[in-house]
Length: 343
Image 1 (tube, rainbow, N blue to C red):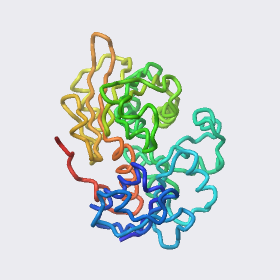
Image 2 (cartoon, helix red, strand yellow):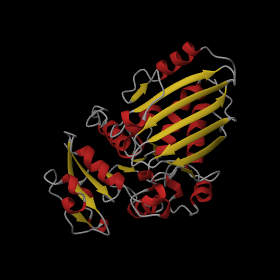
Image 3 (tube, rainbow, N blue to C red):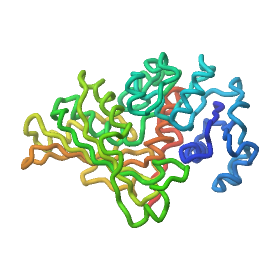
Image 4 (tube, rainbow, N blue to C red):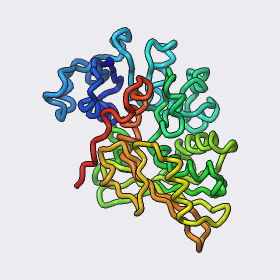
């Protein structure tokens, strides 16, 4: 058993971590923080956990690091880096679910996040926590930067294509759609129910901050940075991300050979499911799985991928727990094997 704390546990990713820990046999959840709800009991803030945990929220300033083996930061972008800067050197391993340490260059961070980084010397020390690509680094990580939800759903289907140089990486178009929980728990005009229901819209054209995260991560497989045209959309749903990618093939490729390459690349990955048909969000809802479909269109000479994840699980909290399992030497699937909530 290890003692675990969650800073910022009132948001969607924080509550999803708690939900997963209710099914994890090696976790002793000992600390939950919230600045706005400090002093309140967990069951009063998140009624779904009544009878499961006897915990109250405290201020982040009252965290006792000596009691923790792992700390999860479910804090907003720009807030996490301030907390880490204040408490460096870190007294225990930290898994950060914000975007503050996903980019290795402070100038790139400032360009896309609109804020100077307060701890740039740690950017190259942070481990990018995508287990399928960086498992060995995660095992010894002190600061693990959990990937974004859109990048997870984009990088995983593109990685085999990039590694085997099957696509022209200057032609990649990413068309992604997310449920509204990806925007966080705070009320916003574009996530207000009357604006989302019976609607479907694109946003962040040319400027979405996940673009450099995708490009830089794929660069580690390729040796040179690809160019991604990334357009996200908002679905009138709570959960899920469905991502399509379109890339020009470097050569015609047999469909059977293409699927064989993916099968070999992901043969030992417990949370990658290669599908014979295009994935659907309902089959990954509430799970840590990423379902992937790949095909080649001879008419247009494009390789097309379709992937589906739950943005709060494989796109956030579930992946963070997967990272923790690797870091602590637990079975990687511990606490994460529940099937989808369907229908």
